[in-house]
Length: 112
Image (tube, rainbow, N blue to C red; front, top):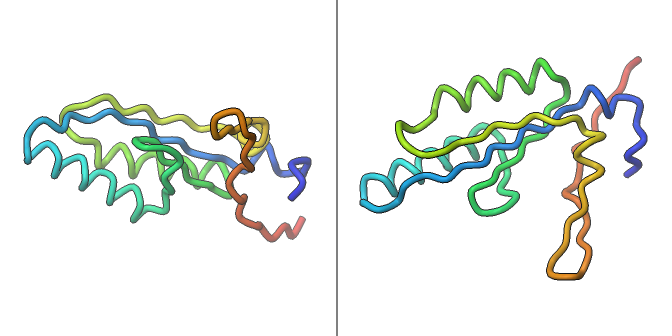
């Protein structure tokens, strides 16, 4: 898919990066619950403790950011980053020295 789409500056990606304590059984349960809630909201695992979600607009991305803020655990470090589809497309991924394709960008119907 071409990264030169006209709406590539309006389409957003939300990245949630976290480092939660997992010393006790209760902390592991809280971390697992946070992860499950992210998945339930449409986030996909990009790396361990990093989840990404595609949104068709910045308004939609804000909705998901607010949802993440509502489920934040009491302890731990959580980062939420929103970038445009254009910026996301400029990322280079590697498995060791071997280059890897970026995740598929969902198709969006453009009416205008």
